View 1: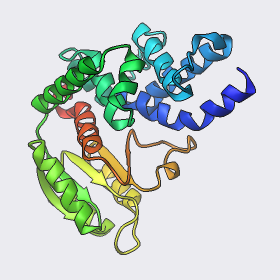
View 2: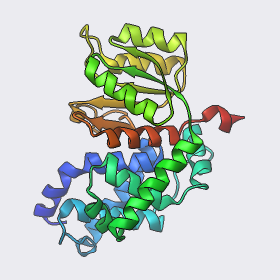
View 3: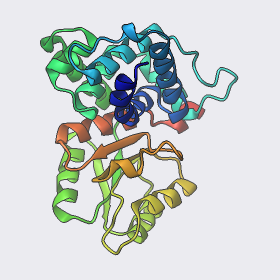
Length: 267
């Protein structure tokens, strides 16, 4: 890979990994697909079309390789996580391209036109695919949500978004202590968490303690995504940047709940 192309791609990789994790349901699986994409690009730089920009070209290349299933599924030895098993069951009921389109046009922030170029569809088809994905995921999932957010206006916006999707809000916590107590009082089906809270406590610490007691999907919503997308430690599968677009949060909730349901799968 040329030095110039490598330099342009490098800052895009944390976000490509985020997209891959959301598709695959785990950091391990998603990162395997990203590595395969980079290896293919190193072997033959001509496979990337940068006529619409490097970012669109990179995602378009990843889209082609993902659909071609060039990477063996992680965990064929029986080590597949319970959330990946859940995802596999739900994928069987949904067109994969609908989920990919939903992620690209909302969670990754591509416009309808850019998404259409990546998946090589028309903008009208992209709109239909996104609507189909949201409707199918929401049909399969209904739950209660714990919101960890110290800004009243933001927590109000998040509550409205959650309820507009047909879910309920169990509690709105402003500190790590409140969040932990709320989760123990009523187990949530999903957690939306800010990182910096009212009393100086950490949303990350709150989530760690909650996850030590129960299995629940978490979406971090932060003004500083680069603090979590370092590649040096386990990263959150679902991460949304502030200021957020309501449609981005809706997409994130739908995607997080897509992998929810461990108890049902285990049963």
